[in-house]
Image (cartoon, rainbow, N blue to C red; front, side):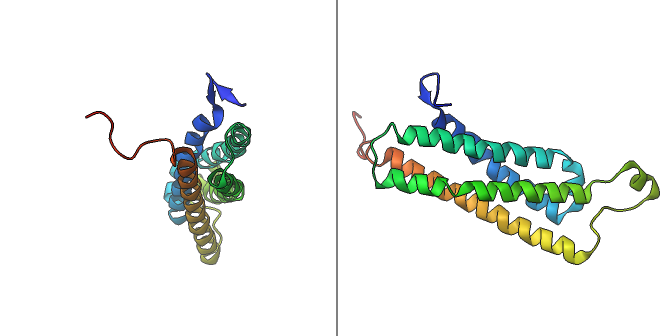
Length: 166
Protein backbone atom coordinates (compact mmCIF):
# COMPACT_ATOMS: atom_id res chain seq x y z
CA UNK A 1 0.00 0.00 0.00
CA UNK A 2 1.55 3.29 -1.07
CA UNK A 3 -1.23 5.89 -1.19
CA UNK A 4 -4.76 6.33 0.12
CA UNK A 5 -6.90 8.94 -1.64
CA UNK A 6 -3.75 10.54 -2.98
CA UNK A 7 -2.02 10.81 0.41
CA UNK A 8 0.98 8.71 1.36
CA UNK A 9 -0.37 5.70 3.29
CA UNK A 10 2.37 6.08 5.90
CA UNK A 11 0.93 9.40 7.03
CA UNK A 12 -2.39 7.68 7.77
CA UNK A 13 -1.15 4.31 9.05
CA UNK A 14 1.22 5.89 11.54
CA UNK A 15 -1.79 6.99 13.59
CA UNK A 16 -2.78 3.37 14.14
CA UNK A 17 0.68 2.60 15.53
CA UNK A 18 0.82 5.77 17.65
CA UNK A 19 -2.49 4.86 19.31
CA UNK A 20 -2.41 1.06 19.48
CA UNK A 21 1.15 0.40 20.66
CA UNK A 22 0.86 2.60 23.80
CA UNK A 23 -2.71 1.39 24.40
CA UNK A 24 -1.54 -2.22 24.16
CA UNK A 25 1.37 -1.48 26.50
CA UNK A 26 -0.98 0.07 29.05
CA UNK A 27 -3.45 -2.82 28.82
CA UNK A 28 -0.64 -5.37 29.09
CA UNK A 29 0.85 -3.79 32.20
CA UNK A 30 -2.57 -3.55 33.83
CA UNK A 31 -3.34 -7.17 32.99
CA UNK A 32 0.06 -8.46 34.08
CA UNK A 33 -0.11 -6.69 37.43
CA UNK A 34 -3.81 -7.30 38.14
CA UNK A 35 -5.12 -10.72 37.07
CA UNK A 36 -8.68 -9.44 37.51
CA UNK A 37 -7.99 -6.83 34.82
CA UNK A 38 -6.60 -9.59 32.60
CA UNK A 39 -9.75 -11.65 33.05
CA UNK A 40 -11.92 -8.63 32.27
CA UNK A 41 -9.89 -7.82 29.15
CA UNK A 42 -10.02 -11.47 28.11
CA UNK A 43 -9.19 -12.16 24.49
CA UNK A 44 -9.27 -8.41 23.76
CA UNK A 45 -5.71 -8.10 25.12
CA UNK A 46 -4.01 -10.47 22.64
CA UNK A 47 -6.30 -9.25 19.84
CA UNK A 48 -5.26 -5.65 20.48
CA UNK A 49 -1.62 -6.71 20.60
CA UNK A 50 -2.00 -8.60 17.32
CA UNK A 51 -3.50 -5.59 15.53
CA UNK A 52 -0.70 -3.39 16.91
CA UNK A 53 1.89 -5.94 15.78
CA UNK A 54 0.48 -6.20 12.26
CA UNK A 55 0.21 -2.42 11.93
CA UNK A 56 3.94 -1.91 12.54
CA UNK A 57 5.30 -3.64 9.39
CA UNK A 58 2.47 -2.20 7.29
CA UNK A 59 3.37 1.30 8.46
CA UNK A 60 7.09 0.64 8.04
CA UNK A 61 6.58 -0.63 4.49
CA UNK A 62 4.49 2.43 3.62
CA UNK A 63 7.20 4.59 5.19
CA UNK A 64 9.87 2.97 3.04
CA UNK A 65 7.79 3.80 -0.04
CA UNK A 66 7.44 7.40 1.16
CA UNK A 67 11.18 7.61 1.87
CA UNK A 68 11.84 6.88 -1.81
CA UNK A 69 9.52 9.76 -2.78
CA UNK A 70 10.88 12.57 -0.59
CA UNK A 71 14.15 14.43 -0.54
CA UNK A 72 16.60 12.39 1.50
CA UNK A 73 18.31 14.12 4.39
CA UNK A 74 19.74 13.15 7.75
CA UNK A 75 16.42 13.65 9.55
CA UNK A 76 14.58 11.28 7.22
CA UNK A 77 17.36 8.69 7.55
CA UNK A 78 17.25 8.98 11.36
CA UNK A 79 13.48 8.50 11.38
CA UNK A 80 13.79 5.47 9.11
CA UNK A 81 16.47 3.91 11.33
CA UNK A 82 14.39 4.42 14.46
CA UNK A 83 11.24 3.11 12.74
CA UNK A 84 12.97 -0.15 11.89
CA UNK A 85 13.43 -0.83 15.61
CA UNK A 86 9.77 -0.90 16.65
CA UNK A 87 8.87 -4.37 15.39
CA UNK A 88 10.72 -6.27 18.16
CA UNK A 89 8.92 -4.18 20.80
CA UNK A 90 5.54 -4.86 19.18
CA UNK A 91 6.38 -8.56 18.99
CA UNK A 92 7.31 -8.52 22.68
CA UNK A 93 3.97 -6.90 23.54
CA UNK A 94 2.14 -9.58 21.57
CA UNK A 95 4.01 -12.51 23.11
CA UNK A 96 3.56 -11.20 26.64
CA UNK A 97 -0.12 -10.43 25.96
CA UNK A 98 -0.59 -14.04 24.89
CA UNK A 99 1.20 -15.30 28.01
CA UNK A 100 -0.86 -13.10 30.33
CA UNK A 101 -4.11 -13.99 28.58
CA UNK A 102 -3.38 -17.72 28.67
CA UNK A 103 -2.23 -17.64 32.27
CA UNK A 104 -5.23 -15.74 33.60
CA UNK A 105 -8.07 -17.24 31.59
CA UNK A 106 -10.23 -19.65 33.47
CA UNK A 107 -12.02 -22.62 32.00
CA UNK A 108 -15.56 -23.55 32.94
CA UNK A 109 -14.23 -26.43 35.07
CA UNK A 110 -11.94 -24.07 36.98
CA UNK A 111 -14.78 -21.64 37.59
CA UNK A 112 -17.06 -24.34 39.02
CA UNK A 113 -14.24 -25.76 41.14
CA UNK A 114 -13.46 -22.27 42.47
CA UNK A 115 -9.87 -22.44 41.26
CA UNK A 116 -7.87 -19.34 40.48
CA UNK A 117 -5.85 -19.02 37.31
CA UNK A 118 -2.87 -20.71 35.69
CA UNK A 119 -0.40 -18.42 37.52
CA UNK A 120 1.34 -21.23 39.32
CA UNK A 121 3.76 -19.32 41.51
CA UNK A 122 4.35 -15.81 42.71
CA UNK A 123 7.85 -15.65 41.14
CA UNK A 124 6.36 -16.40 37.71
CA UNK A 125 3.78 -13.63 38.17
CA UNK A 126 6.49 -11.21 39.25
CA UNK A 127 8.72 -12.11 36.31
CA UNK A 128 5.91 -11.67 33.78
CA UNK A 129 4.90 -8.42 35.47
CA UNK A 130 8.43 -7.02 35.36
CA UNK A 131 8.87 -8.09 31.73
CA UNK A 132 5.53 -6.53 30.82
CA UNK A 133 6.44 -3.23 32.44
CA UNK A 134 9.87 -3.21 30.79
CA UNK A 135 8.57 -4.06 27.31
CA UNK A 136 5.64 -1.67 27.71
CA UNK A 137 7.91 1.21 28.66
CA UNK A 138 10.38 0.33 25.91
CA UNK A 139 7.63 0.24 23.29
CA UNK A 140 6.11 3.56 24.35
CA UNK A 141 9.48 5.30 24.50
CA UNK A 142 10.36 3.92 21.06
CA UNK A 143 7.05 5.13 19.60
CA UNK A 144 7.73 8.58 21.08
CA UNK A 145 11.27 8.72 19.68
CA UNK A 146 10.13 7.56 16.24
CA UNK A 147 7.25 10.04 16.19
CA UNK A 148 9.45 12.89 17.32
CA UNK A 149 12.02 12.16 14.64
CA UNK A 150 9.27 11.84 12.01
CA UNK A 151 7.75 15.17 12.98
CA UNK A 152 11.16 16.83 12.79
CA UNK A 153 11.81 15.26 9.39
CA UNK A 154 8.42 16.37 8.06
CA UNK A 155 8.25 19.85 9.53
CA UNK A 156 11.81 21.12 10.06
CA UNK A 157 11.66 23.52 7.11
CA UNK A 158 7.98 23.39 6.19
CA UNK A 159 6.70 26.42 8.10
CA UNK A 160 7.64 29.95 8.99
CA UNK A 161 8.22 30.53 12.70
CA UNK A 162 6.75 34.02 12.49
CA UNK A 163 3.00 34.43 12.10
CA UNK A 164 1.74 35.51 8.68
CA UNK A 165 -0.77 38.28 7.99
CA UNK A 166 -2.23 39.38 11.33
